[in-house]
Length: 433
Image 1 (cartoon, rainbow, N blue to C red):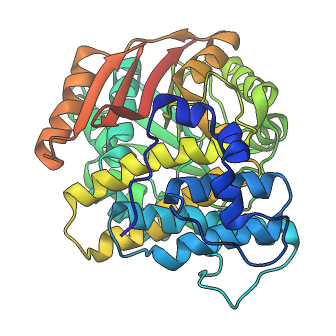
Image 2: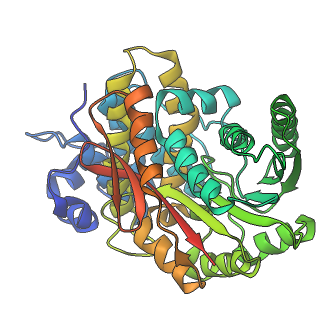
Image 3: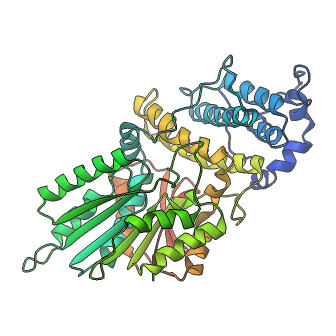
């Protein structure tokens, strides 16, 4: 069993880079510029320190030593152990993948599981994540309530979903729209443009949503929008297109009708855009469409220091450790030991997230609500405060379906936050033109 991966103090994450360079014990254990085998220490370095040392060695180009540090962790960790074991395994594995990618080869005679497929997580793992953890349902429920309030009274509604995935967000909203319809007028017409990088997934999503809408007698249309340049969430090793190319690609297939009320949904999407300039360009493109509401849901992580991009790899790995320690502990508190569903979720969903967070472009993941809010305001949006009902509904979701005392919902800084214990993990906010 490995020790906790949480930082021992608030300054640890902020000074990960310096700590890795100056701690002689860690360097003695795994460093040495790729020379002979590491020497034993009187006191073995902690798992956290080994992972930070690996990140520092990788950043400095000492690939053999970086790989040895990761393999020390992998030799003791397991994807089937406790929360600390499982997270250590996925972080070490992600670092090995990056070492091997930088070296231009994969070494197979090691305790490392070779890279998962670059395809999106399976629908089974994605839906299991939606059931056993509240993060996606919280984001969908809170964003849906903001959309429902913004389109009140509209007769034609258009929702642009920038990452439709399997479309699980939309049946509850379609049901709510149908139930709120004026009996004299009937329900409004709803059109969803679902964007994504996999055409087959989008087609299946459209078929399911059309069938559901028919079952509740709601006039409904679904249009798939293939964003061939967009980065898929939870997938390691894929390139990210600039916002201008993403917007241009979308514009060629996106239909906008002047009599429609438009809502733009960005749940777990904006972190796919690299750099402040590309994020700003994308949000200006959205602003030009004059949406009634834009919903944004993204991860929260302390230690970003307000930076737009965490370039320092040890610091980024420290931030990821703190964030995913809370996520893995939450899953452990709510799922029984040996749960197959949890194993699938951690391998196919969270494991891919960790791969992407450690990848060369992963520094953009940790912007936080301050950066998203600043970018939205810079593009000309104003905050649209979430209603008290939206916040109380999120709390009710936790009480009914995720009764663990560790989950917390907080309304602050113009957003709604979901956290574990004292750590915010996800924020949802709404914006208007």
